Length: 224
Length: 295
Image (cartoon, rainbow over all chains, first blue to last red):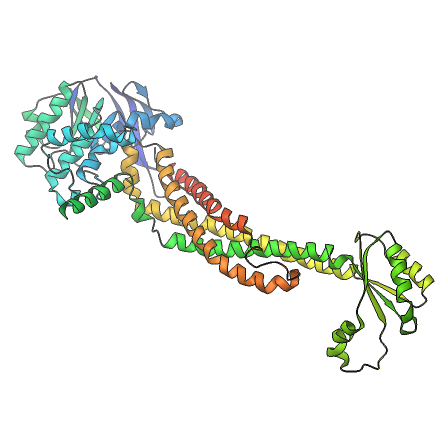
């Protein structure tokens, strides 16, 4: 479960203080196992909200609870373990360019301390799941944008995360691949994962109707 | 051939997988080890200088410091045996021998030339059991028995030489401290350069749940290894240089030791692990400090 209570976010300003509010007074709850669209125009604050969800950013004020744990700046030591239960599909993929597709997908498992011998079945299954079997040894630069996107998705779900956060995951995919990706995400959701997907594609939302959050200028204007 | 290529590709993949931050590229295996090698060479020279000054100080204090010269005026030259008997009977005298007249002429030839007719004092050399002993009672006993006999203790010169040796030792240790400080600064700069070039990879690993210990440990292991390797090279380069210096210094140390056996082998052996430890600790501190900016 994810719970925001009067959460606000300001980024540091160049002068060392805090800049204007990127997010203001957000209060909502995402039930465990839910699928939620995060909507809004560019600059509305979608990426900032997602950064709070995957703990790349801590709220400037308010209370944030992720996967049943209250996120507190004075208890940062607890955050890495929490992050390992969250899968993230970044808008710009954020693959490591010098690692093969296999090793990019295996990265979260290695960080979680999984033994080398037990990696292969899970990683191979994930690559097959996203339709990239046979591309294990390829470097990201040798793959198309869509293929890189799918590696990023495989990396996000390989640990069977309790919370999956995706930022514009269909941005580099054609309509067929986008529908296939959404099918994968809903499949994850049916297996119990809480899924939050940020998009500005109303068509996609229409094809996969689910509850949504809509942001405007950093404020929540619709929840339901 | 194809199998070899496949095996090579797999080996490369495994090596890269073990280095998700790409530190083998970000932290060059040439620049940092090269700088650390130069500093290890300086550290080895400073350590050897300190050890050498210590050894010379010991030798001067225990050898030359104990040496006392006794001169009998030419008119008392016939009383050499009496002087020897008196000196050897004294409890503070450890050893006493007359200086051969031929050796005396040999020693004075550069200053006096060939002047065999010139009357020279008879000279005895002796060593005291303890350099702290006051030579005045010996002087009095000798001049009472043999008028005109003089005792010349070299203590004051020894004290000055020992002070000089201590100063040299202090300077060498100061140089060593400076080298360590520069090494810490160089490692910190290299770490920051590595952090800057791998910022995105660090943020990715951080967002995927890597701990600060994990990220800092990867940097520290890489930098510690590079520093240890550089120090090993520096120590290896220092060995022949120190052996040559040791050979030059051998006459000052009595000329009895072989250059190789006089080298500070333990210090040289400790340089790589100590450099590795300095690199490891500096990298840990630098990376952890940098990571504080991430949530």
